[in-house]
Length: 338
Ligand code: ASP
Image (cartoon, rainbow, N blue to C red; front, side, top):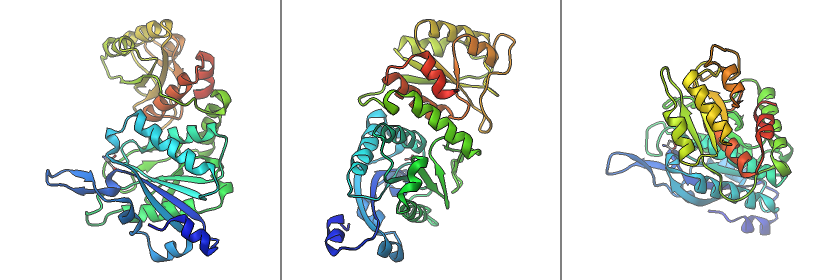
């Protein structure tokens, strides 16, 4: 590890990038139980960076946690987001890289974006990255992804307006609207294809959160419900009973359900539970188009709000953030749909 202080004393004008490690496959090796688990420490991850990059960029690596991202909860995601916000608040760094498991990278990256926006600061570039192959696997993609992330994070601060980024498989994408689409391909993530649409979606959401950002503290319970042919009201009702303040429906097609789901949504909305509709289809916007008693227009009339861009994982984080900020149905609608 090369502490920034040493560089500062040397007077070098190299950009300073802080790498915060959290675990995930990028740091994982196969253990004695046969399963991949994070084990590689921050210094060893840093040591995979190529010398020319380390000569150009002053990199400090620091471990925040060492977990599989599927085991993360709101507390750990918040801890990462707050750490990034604190590190970006002073003048100590020019860019921040977060190494993270790919399973839930899209959620933590979006939460971090929201927390940073609350501070109104965009001086540093924040870049998430990870890997599809463990550190001890042939053709491990972690070192290449980390190098690209550090290189991106060391770029001009003005470019950080796009919000939190994800660098993966040679591409750099805005975190907003990006989701994991492959369990095995090295090119695991897909950005929302229309960058302008994704940016509009992000701006709408940030404008709808009071104070331009996210209330600190814990997020309220928001559940995700996957709909399927023949699904009934049981799970939606159970979420309400469990105290969910919001429910994200992963609907079929453009955002369709059935009459039982529509009835359950109407009852949830009447009880003050916010319902957001997204789709299980990987591509294309979710929107209210079909009727017939269970279609998207029926869900909308029952009180549900459509999330055209954000899929369930990120929609859940945004909805929880909005509810934490105490906004009502109007703001939730403006945040997701405009
Ligand atoms: N299960 C791993 C994780 O999300 C997968 C990965 O990092 O690619 O931590």
